[in-house]
Length: 244
Image (cartoon, rainbow, N blue to C red; front, side):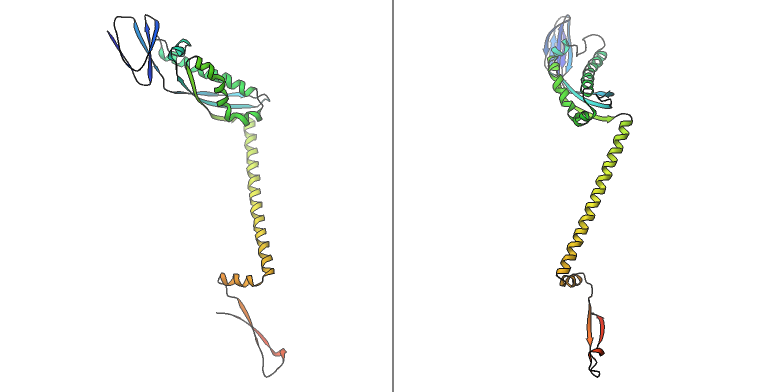
């Protein structure tokens, strides 16, 4: 008698004398006799990275794109038949690495076609949606093989060679221009405020005295003192005093 336990988030492919018989759900199973083998298969999401490579656009520019792909086994028997799962005997690790290489290679080819068929301007405008487009393109084929594609995200997008330096300089010029424009707008707003203030003071002189009183400044008041003995306007003296 042979006892096998299939744990949660896994299924088991039951082989009898080398022939695939059924898919086992999580639980504990007993097999009588010999010739029975169970291959555990994880049905949890699995992430992998498509490595960065230089890809040339249709107008000769080099770009680098790196993707993060999430896959999950939804049909273990179909995945096994499509050689996406390790064999019951032999090097399971080697088979798993081959499966991962198959997925990344498919995306590398699809990504190459996506970039090489567009100009640099079109690539830069649409690279954020490349994951969604590649997923829609490959999803049906992978489902037929028992694999479901989850999220496909862009981890990195860069330009290569002198084009990267040129783009950095262009970005710096754009930022400097925006800073200069913001400074000019601030100066223009200050001048408009000063002009409005000057117009109000010209039209309403009393506003200046009110402003001085509000800020705590002491206005100067002119007193005219008349010389009674002289009795003539020319003898009047003007004294400027500050109110305490």
